[in-house]
Length: 92
Image (cartoon, rainbow, N blue to C red; front, top):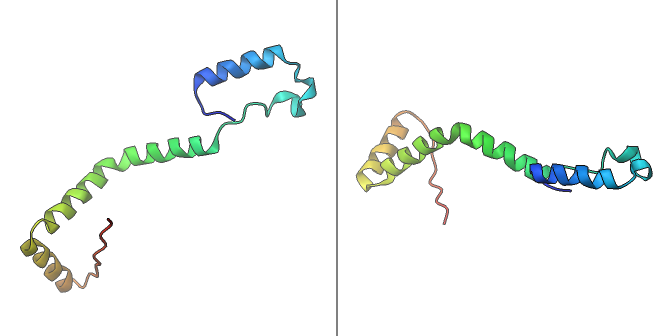
């Protein structure tokens, strides 16, 4: 099992050229298995790249409202007026 590097693809082809695939199940079709974790990582990175601007704007907004006690107080008051619940979750 290897990642999706083109070098690995070339190496697998060279190996299969030197070995008889008759002894393999399904003629060696399953000899080269792609790593599911690597594929999942690529999918997540691609998805995050699409929404990275939104994530950055949310971070900037949170930073703005929590920068001073007065801003945080204004934020809490606005949430109360609009009946919006919120919680303070700080990760260390």
